[in-house]
Amino acid sequence: MVQRHMAFLTDQHCHTRVSPDSHASLYDMAMAEYAAGVRWLCITNHCDTVDWRSLEYDPACRTVARREREELAQIRDRLPADLDIRLGLELAELQMHPSLTEELSGAPGLDFILGSHHINREFGDYHEQSYADPAHCDALWDIYLDNLQWVADRDYYDVMAHIGYFRRYACYQGVDTALTLAKYGDRVEHLLKTIIGHGRGVELNCSGLRDGCGPFPSEEILRLYRALGGEIVTTGSDAHRPEDAAKCLDQGRELLRACGFRYIAVYTGRKPDFIPI
Ligand SMILES: [Zn+2]
Ligand SMILES: [Zn+2]
Image 1 (cartoon, rainbow, N blue to C red):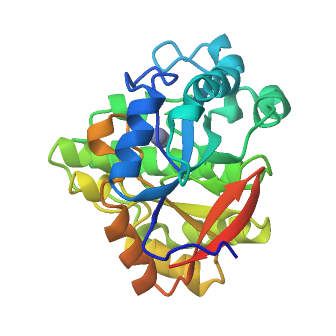
Image 2 (cartoon, rainbow, N blue to C red):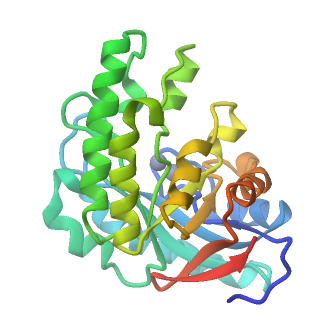
Image 3 (cartoon, protein in one colour):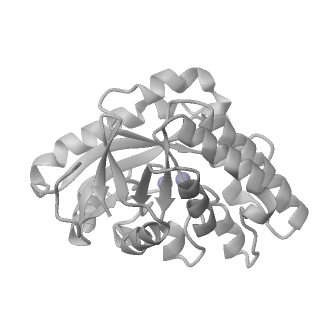
């Protein structure tokens, strides 16, 4: 157990300019996180095996961990002494290039890996979809669950990132579609049981709380995970800009408490430790 003041926040999902969709320096991001009350921070830049536009293999994935290490080495001395900082990856689309699994997840110096999925073979990036047609939404949820199950069946990740997250893009288009238990209960339960069975966990991604699209996963899925015996949870703001650093982590922590979780997991060298909520 990590003996620390209970009021501090943990953010184990944030991006810097090592990610193609962020311009933030690690120093600015870390200082914004610290100012917001975060004392345990893990940087998790995108490590995608494919380019999101072309869906072609992207060799840049092989240097993300190294670039992140170098970025931290340059500024580490300037960070507050009581900020625990760790290095991780948001590792995605290994299903398209499974032969890279060992190389990417085994990169030196990694503390934490988010198992993530944003792009499917059939339609590409969930971000690029039109959600107007309910039949297309159904097809996307099916494909999404197939891909998450592929990740869950493997052992390269520590926690599964933002289950149900693409609801956000529908929400931006004024469409309400979600990974509900009423519709997908059996598949979600199988997914969660697989994660638990492998000794892995689930991320509570608070970015949807920030933009009003709900937490990822939803409260009902968090409650099911807990009821099935799931104990390992992390919290992440998924900030790509210092302005979003640590946003809604406090709300996320309250939600975890309400769902019956007693600890938040924090990772060093791919091993969890537990902080009381
Ligand atoms: Zn993501
Ligand atoms: Zn992210």
